Length: 303
Image 1 (cartoon, one colour):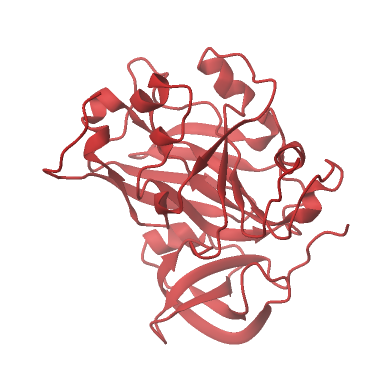
Image 2: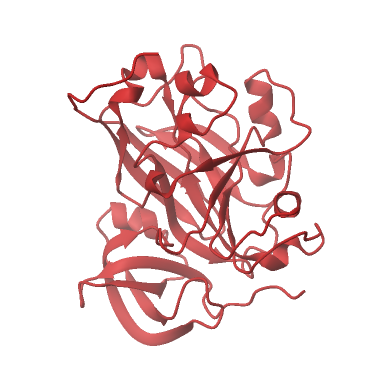
């Protein structure tokens, strides 16, 4: 099996000023942190890409478009399944006082949890007040599968990856720690920023050499590297493909390094008005998102 080769190196999805329609494109400035530029209101220009983000034959054109609104690099229609690994960094397991898992800890998220750059993370009434429910940040590298993968070896695993992007896996610790299954606590609507750039796997040849950071209200709280993953990207793809087809468009969040809020003394938790930035190196860039506590009179179950 040969690696996936794309014409583009960094792909963004956006609404263009010229057309008011959604396009995909390659940023003209190869060194630009697109997410940070969008946050700062800078002008972002991109060469339009004709085709799908998941189609290696998609063509980079000479047509220049201006980004009006930066979106997540993949649409919800393109994403097949959102898989996530928990407790996948040695330093994070240590800070939480937990043993390293013998096997990858897998959970799933619904597509309704995903949002893009600059969108607002919503804390629902079911996870309020924040001081009790401890909403938490988690910077993560995201694997994007580009061709159907089933029963693949670790040696061949990266050949099925079309690219990598970033995420902020917002987690609600009270709900998470109450049960053994983490899906409910990590699946609320509009709580998982994704992006900003999808970087080709041809550019990130070694996904275990990606730096990643998270800041909240200007303070750096996480500062790690994917080298500390317990199950690396090759192992993750190979393990999850056992007896299961990872379809093109499947994404895999690969866990977070140390520095999460709920283990700090006193705990750090997200609340209304907070500003978060997660940054990943190798051209992925910065996801900037604010936090809002949803106001609602709807019934909240008391268990």
